[in-house]
Image (cartoon, rainbow, N blue to C red; front, side, top):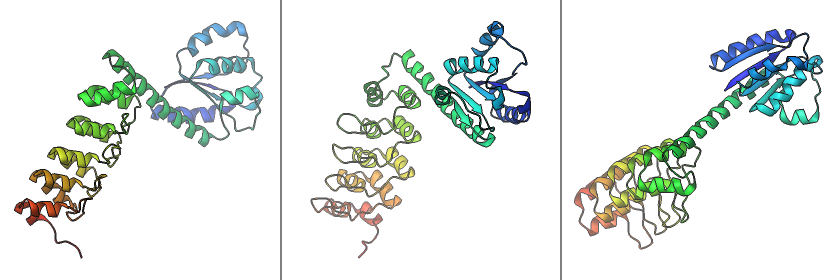
Length: 300
């Protein structure tokens, strides 16, 4: 974000305060005073200068709104710059079409708040554009299907670029399976972590089986993923459409590692599925003494 700041002499105080804040935020800026005398024939150098900036700020009193330099600069900035801001604490009036394009603030504090919001938006926009360029350079289609393919095939570099480009970490495929669960089902641990780091909902469910990432990780016997999801604060006792929990699936599969991880984290072994079975009953059925010894007493 680069900023050109236009100011009138009576706004030097605001300019000094603003300049200090822009410097602290590492925003490159240039201050230009409204000249006392100016005509359209003096515009060439100004146009050349303005092309170098992404944003423009005007710190001027309302009595300068008819100044030819102000009118010319505003007209150019509204058309060429990403955003144009105006601090007007005098209660000035402006043409209606300007007000639709301008971001007008009536106090310095409001002006700064809006500017910082724009800085954050601009940085996100730059990051997303850079990520899309990175995907294009890798020959990856920038689309939902391209994103899903990267998740399924384990292309972690492309998945990270998709996330930086603004694609949702909770995106669903056509069957209603979230990308987090697709990553688990395809055993792509790095992508699971990436999606969680970018805010994926840890307990989101797949519509095909009503399973969570934890359930699928447990059913596949991937202890490292189970541990990661536990550490991320997942619901240990969420149940699938068949009523099974991650612990039920782990015990039923005969996976002591995942079962013990879940028990240590506090999973309930007595929740029954639609067949009336529970992790405890499966452990009894299969004589899983190590698992049974780690199960807490059933609460009455």
